[in-house]
Image 1 (cartoon, helix red, strand yellow):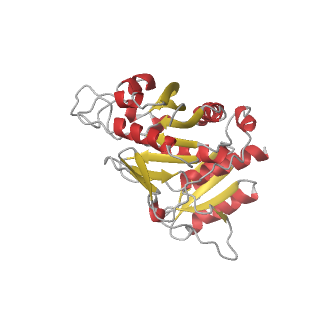
Image 2 (cartoon, helix red, strand yellow):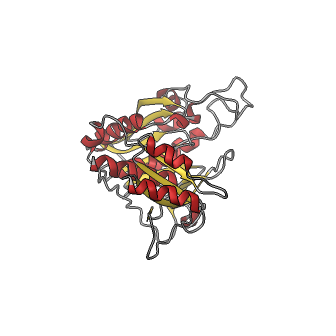
Image 3 (cartoon, helix red, strand yellow):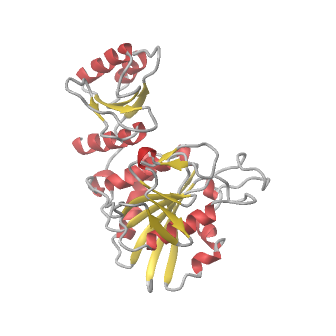
Length: 317
């Protein structure tokens, strides 16, 4: 590992949060500790022989407040460092609430043949037993692993890919899951053990030119609508009047939609609004069939389908 450099980009989140009481794991304020201070609190990271770990603060937010502007800045800094020959990989500290969305955005836009690893915490930095330090060490270890490229999430000893990872629990330290796919691997004492038959070369598609994102005045307006018993179409009609450009429907079952909501979505589609179906089920994906009225999300969750639709509209614009 001689001469390798890892760049850690900080965006805030619980991993950088603090509470007045060390026993308080939920009443904290996120995004209080700078990323350089986080690294300084983990001496083992600076003691790895032949590895330089550098830090840069890109944002300092509770990830519930993540937005397109921060994504744009983060992607630009990731690409800047990934393009540098001395950098082996990039690690991002992030809040858990929207980590899956940021991971998918980066997977969609970056041009990288190196690893980008997002990590997080469910307990604040001030906790009696914070989970952030170990997660951060595991993320750096994965970024240093051989033959790895693309975007990953590491937490509670598990490695997840950007496409399937979802926050699945609101409190436990092992809050992430990948549905039917399961973890890609596990971090064990500084090494990664990949699941059987897993290809680790998850190279980002980089299908969106970085200059297009950087020059975008604003993100295309795409909203998520939930189909449920008794759903109505009035919200869709209101969004169309308000200028929405795309709608992702979190459907019941295999892409089914309440008839009143479906009628409104058809009106929206006729008016030029892009409509995409995803399932609200935690596992599986919508299986398309002849005669479908709306395109499906190709297995993406509703929040990730929204990101892909935003990027499609942005490039189309």
